[in-house]
Length: 161
Image (cartoon, rainbow, N blue to C red; front, side, top):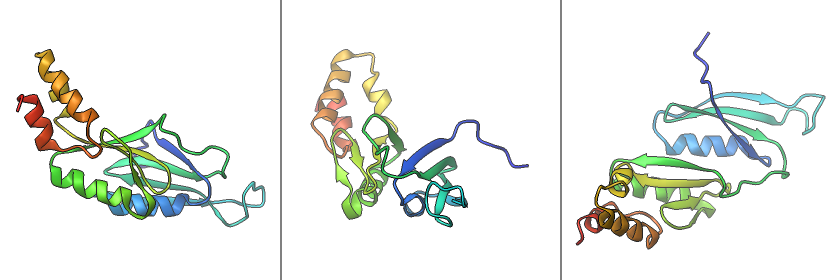
């Protein structure tokens, strides 16, 4: 029996869980669709339609459910992606905002399915947790003035340039 991930993020979609999972697995390396389950006679959705789609993003397991329009996504939860380079930030940002996604602020965006993402440089916590409070404040001010985060600008802010 394969190792089972103890905690799995469960995402509620209206009726496009498989489409979303296929999109997400196309965006991230080391990603794949793991399994699909289908509604049967007991419903509540049409028999034969996709009920759940299990998938992995960068090795992290998720389950997407076609549960209907009852519970839409809100900004109360987001998926945060740590990026090592500006090129990675730009590529993920462009892919996740494509086809109806929307930039928000401070490195946050909503994809075309309404799911919120944070696309952040891996070094951001280090820049924000500097022992020098002025340095941390400059970085936080820079973040608050950005939509998509700019790694070079954040480093310049940290250095007071």
